[in-house]
Image 1 (tube, rainbow, N blue to C red):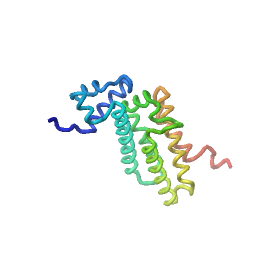
Image 2: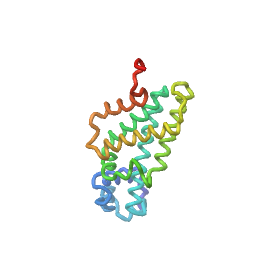
Image 3: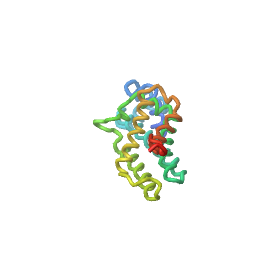
Image 4: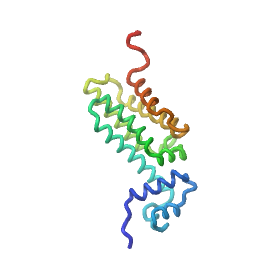
Length: 197
């Protein structure tokens, strides 16, 4: 009997195939060959190709969130922590071509206005994390008192729009640093100059 393979290896390998060929063209046989195992062994990890695909998406999004949290944990001030959450999220996708291609192949993964949100649990987790960062800034007197639930949702929706327009519908990031810095500057400072009231 073969020892059980690490799920991370299963998901990362399958993700490469789904990213390269898309869901419809990827076969369990492709993934099995990439893992050097039989089709039936792949089915011991997932009930179907669709289940494996969803597991791969959850794996990728979970890694995305871990990456952001690890980056934010290195920052000290509330403002730096909040803005690092945005920059790290963009940085993760910029470094992960497979995730970029997966999003481009399947826009339903991150829809702007979903009827059904496959990633509702993950998205809610992200919004709640932003809410915690904003509340921490309010408690430290850095951010003005504001409705943290609404603000976190607005911040997340802006980020989601940025990802969709850049990676799902666009041709790539363009000047990613400039776009990111501009968005963060407008969010933090607004458009009105303080000396022109």
